[in-house]
Length: 316
Ligand SMILES: *Cc1c(COP(=O)(O)O)cnc(C)c1O
Image 1 (cartoon, protein in one colour):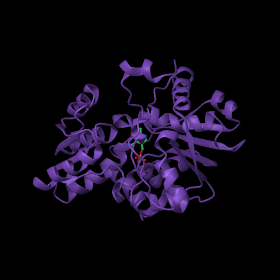
Image 2 (image 1 turned 180 degrees about the vertical axis):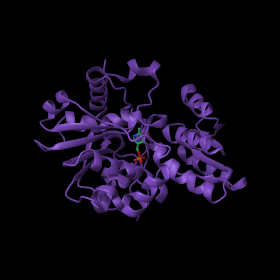
Image 3 (image 1 turned 30 degrees about the vertical axis):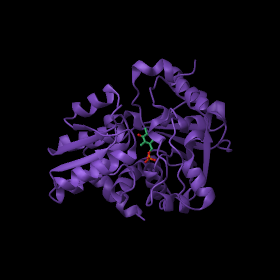
């Protein structure tokens, strides 16, 4: 398991690249749920999501070790982050995407000079291909979450929250493969253990919920939740033990609640967030936190939405 030391080191590594993102307040959201609600705005991060933190930590280390080529398997935020940081550091990146990846996502990766390779429709097909491409060309494969440097990079969000709000009581975090939450858990529980950390999953992608219940990593079948950043089928070998050790609570939100939360943040707060971010707001809005009068930080993990599809995502 990683420790707080690695998160401090990660911060030193990535601070010249990433934004320290703002904390946004909402009176309306606060009165809706009876807590003082703050939103940590990683939708305003470089490339539009927090993934650039872990990717920068990992790719910088690879470059130091002599790598001139990296690969990743993701059409989403992770793929964009890896392409972006590789471009800045002057090395090549190939991102393996599904055959049906949307044009806007491919264009974003190509905009950062990332090379695209299409492969299959599932991550079970993409992952080995990205690993193979790295192996064939002496490159480094950058995993989306199950890696100590990735986890440490994402954990820098936890350090920022503790500095930006010194009387925080509760932090609410979306869970996909668990890189984001295991980094934040390590940063917070090894600095201020009295802070409560609550994870959120869509009901349709409750793999970490089931894994915690069973006491072992448990996979779910393929899911089509609108929170596409949270569709991972199971928690990681490295992330799950951290979640088991430190997580206080895990709550589930419905697809309708996710849409409502995204709509609220767009209409009332003028912030465009993606469905995977909206799960943390949904947990607060729909009173799933079981706290009152506390200082609550919901992590907005990203803001990458195909704007042409907004009307299909928002509640009708
Ligand atoms: C990747 C991602 C997540 C989930 O992060 P994990 O580290 O896989 O748990 C949440 N929100 C957004 C926007 C993401 O891109």
